[in-house]
Amino acid sequence: MVPSGNSAELALRLPNARLTLYPDAGHGGIFQYHAEFVDEALAFLGS
Image (cartoon, rainbow, N blue to C red; front, side):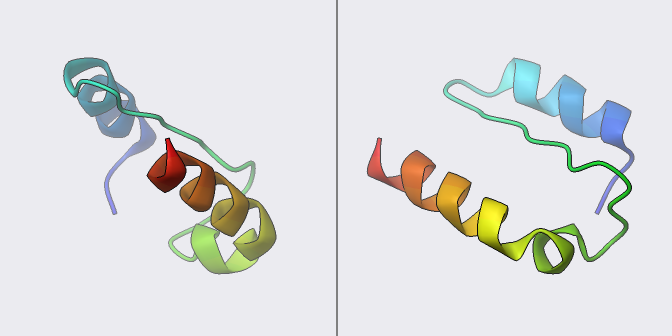
């Protein structure tokens, strides 16, 4: 887990990267927003 600004910078530098920031999510964002995360992860992996 890194600051959001670092994630945005990294996403700009990685080809085909996708960055999703969930509102008011802490270190457990993928657990707080599990349904959204799973849908996005599956879409990314399927592309």
